[in-house]
Image 1: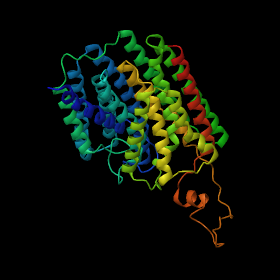
Image 2: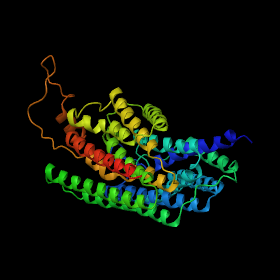
Image 3: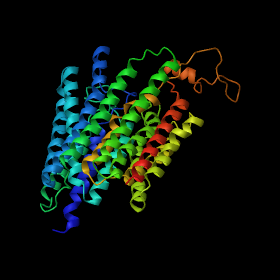
Length: 448
């Protein structure tokens, strides 16, 4: 069988598997809830979301390292197919579930299955250029676009975005089975040493646990004042960045220093993208989810193509940083409509260049980088600090001298219950986070 025909299912399986894993591992707070229950049970359900995702990210790296130690691409794709089958069974079971505790348990299982899918797909793809680019495309574009989806009505669900589409599940299952059946037995997954596998696991565990603990700390903030909230968020952001930098440096000691650059590159992209992801989740957003997926997919593909010609991770981060930097000058610019898609395109092109330029030789290290954005919850907290709004008798006026209630942020916040975020300071904090990551990437690549 020609190599091109044999590898075609692997390319499709990598793309669909990564996109499905991205959907499951994404937890965008805000918008419509996908579960209807009491406040106490809802709080327990929401608390379980980032915990399950953090566990899924760690499992992704562990599974990938295990597949690399074994070396068989067929086993890797069979593992990916089994993980997809588990996700299918959970989707079928959810409508008949009674009780939030069961939904929480299924969420954890689904997150672990998504992590297994991502790790196995990375192992099965790595070492073959087109499949590994397809994996990066599916993961990055998925992270930057699936936020725009959500359950149409309040219903039972294991996660904030609801359950994956049955068509995506069916196609992913078929593609992973086909990839396993057509895998070339003589093509082995690039090997990883036990020490490298351990360091990769330590890196993703440190980043995931740090974010999870800090987002819990931020969540306990009583909102005493705007300054108090920002002090907590800034401290948490600094801690996350320092932990990520130290973990990347330690990881670089066991491998080519340039390989660990993807950890910082992905962290920078997560920080740069948060203002856009928050706006994509807004209830008044007038952008179609399919439009967001199309723009993200095309823009990431362009970025990956540029990176293939000339690796420029720092340039990619600089492009992505334009989004939070613009928020410092024009906080309300591009919050919805076509300009929101423009902002999405800018950050996704930068993401494609940055991640594509930093793709390492080790599948496990690559999985660390691809999983980092899903656990970067502290950056989301920075993008969603609420500005206290006071209602006063000073409504805005339109051109005819009448009261422009719909144009008043106070009216929108008070009457519709929609928060107004502190975009200007968030832009400063997140832009500086991207600069820090770019500095770290530059240092790692220079030490190669």
